[in-house]
Every structure is written in C-alpha cells, then in structure tokens.
Length: 386
Ligand SMILES: *Cc1c(COP(=O)(O)O)cnc(C)c1O
Image (cartoon, rainbow, N blue to C red; front, side):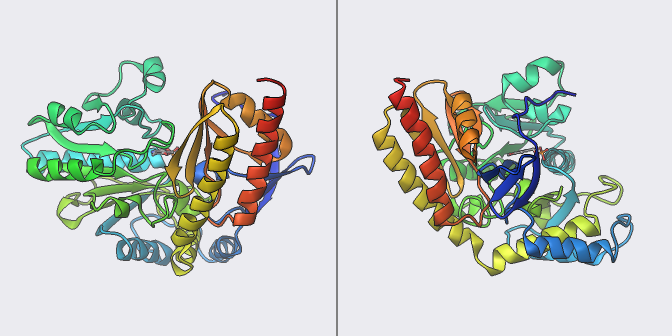
C-alpha cells in the first residue's frame, strides 16, 4: 500500500552483519531490520531453534501451557526487575497492552484515573491509540480525531510532567532514549526524577524499551543504567532476533488483570518463543551487552575522528549500539544513498541525522569497515565542495 518509500534494492539473504541483494551485491547492515536482528542474520542458535520447534509444535492456543513460552517468561523474569509477562506480536501491541494494564490499575487502585503522560518526539507504534501516545505531529495529524486519554509533554523536562499530573493521571510512559525521535538521550537524572515523582503520586512508570532493551544500550535493559525500576516495561524489536514478538512485563503488585481482560491469538506461540528463547539465552550466556558497550565505545571513538575531520558533522548521539551522527545540513537522505552504493546500510532518522543500529554481535573489524565507507562518502562530499 505504499506506506514506505523503499530503497531501490531487493534483499535476498543475510549472514551475520551482512546482507546480499538480488544482484548478489554485499552490504554491511547497520540497520538490522530496525534494531531487530540482535544476533545478526540467520544466527545458528536461532535457526536451529526454529527448525527444531517447527517440527515439534508450531502453534497452540493460549488456553494451554507450552514449554518455550514458559521458559522464555522465566528467563525474562530472572533477568529483569519485573515479575509477570504477557506475550504479543509487535511493539505497538506490547504498548497497547501496557496501557490497558495501567488503565485497569487506575480503575481499581487510583479512583478511576486513566490518563497517560507521554513525551514529544517519542515513538510508541502505529495503532490509533499508540499514535495518540506518540508525541509527533506527522504521525497524528492524518488520523485526527484520535483516542482520548493521552497528554504529550516535552522530553527531558521533569517540570512538564509535574505540571500535567492530575487526579486523572494513572501513568507516565516514555523511552529511556528516544529512538525514532532521533536518538535523543535525556539528562542522567531525568528517569530517576520521574520515578520519584511517580512514586510520590502513586502513579505508574512505564518504560518503552522496545528499541533500547535486550542489550542494545550496553546493559540487558536500559533502565539498569539509570538506577530506576519501571512498574511496567515493554519489549519487542531485538527480543526475537528477527521473529515477530512483543512483550510487556509488570511488577506483581501492578499485575491486576484477571482472566479474560486481555489476550492474543498468536502472542507467545511456541515457534516464536523458541527462537526468542534461543536468542536471549545466547545474549545472556555470552554477555553480549558487555560486548555492545565495548564495540559501541570503539564506534563512537571512530565517529569522533570523522567529526574532527568534516565540519558538516555536528554531533554524535546515543549509547551502546544505538547511535546517531548529526549534520549541520539536511543531508541524511543523500548520505544514506551514497552509503548504499558503497555497501553500507544506515538509516536517515532525521533530515539532518543518520542512525546506526547494527546487530549486537558486530565486531570492531566490521565497525572499521563501516567507518571506512563513511569516510569515503564524506571525503567525496568535501571534494565536491558540498
Ligand atoms: C519500533 C518501536 C515501537 C513500535 O514497534 P512495532 O513492532 O513497529 O509496532 C514502539 N516503541 C518504540 C520505542 C519503538 O522503537
């Protein structure tokens, strides 16, 4: 339906951090299916889990227990600060579920409070309610009127949250680092101040870790770096290393659903959970988050050298392996096409910024390759007096 302006290549296969198009041209993939392919393309652990589960049990209704679902839930609980999990199929669905849980909590525990505070430049998904939650005019304007009950305030501004909090408020929801909004990192104290405010008011903190979770920022979850524990957390993208899965997790005291109040036909299917379990197990057992921290820092150092060399680079943003390079001009779309020609996939997250979200298992050597391509592209621009 032409909802995406596609790039002019067809991808046919992938291995590790590389993909190949229909002409067999090779690319280094620093988009990774939008921060999805945590272990890169066709990682043996994931492929084997899918193959094995595909010949054992592909799908069953959620009226029954299945082993991969229970094991995945167990692993998420053991490695996070949360106690309960619900599985679904995407990020938007995870956020929808998290907000339904917050509303249910508001109804039962907060005198019917239902309003959810979210931030400008956020991204929470494409369903009607998540468009209302997403504080970006370009996503909202085409679909007005939107569902009620969301208040958008400035990001990285604790006072803005305090100002709009009322007896109607049941939760604050935000990303620890805004991904789609441009890789915006808030002040170190921001999350902690929000958490303190939420606790004071008895309202819930929902962290959307759909992009930042599962090692992307150099810790298994981004909240670990801010000294806060969310009441509810949402996951998707990197959780399955490529298979469609979303999840929301909650503290026991917040987990107020009773049977029948929420559900999903496909969510938590054995096939998808088996793949996701294999991926998460690999990430935890091999301490991939530490590797992300190390290689991410190496990448930032390399980008710093480029910044010193080219005056149209204005900024390096982000952390771990969620990074952006800001430009003084709106050249991101051109840079992306030039990188594509040279065999590197990157994302124009803003008209004046490109984003890097490679597989978590990327090596220093592959980062060097990407830096070389960027340098070639930037050099050519400089020579042409652009
Ligand atoms: C991608 C993303 C979503 C939406 O996920 P979908 O799987 O596309 O529905 C929600 N929140 C954040 C932070 C995201 O990055």
